[in-house]
Length: 115
Image (cartoon, rainbow, N blue to C red; front, side, top):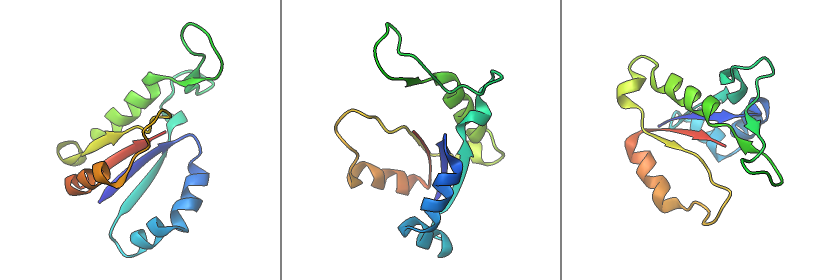
């Protein structure tokens, strides 16, 4: 299985992925995980990937443009385009993911994660 992980903190992701169950799976050749910096796909000079919520309110929200550009770029890599599986974006609202929907991604052979 191949997984492309889009993140704001790629250095942190490398450490966690190397020392966990996923690290053992990578060393055994069961999974290939590529980590990508989401800011690389932002087009402004400050590489902005978040913005204030429309209509105001507390907090920040992710901008769609960098995420869409990143997914389109990853899906467009060589033979990857024809065999790219699902794009998964974790949602901060309930319900949390469980194993049942994730098994379907395994059967497809590839997934992209962002969050």
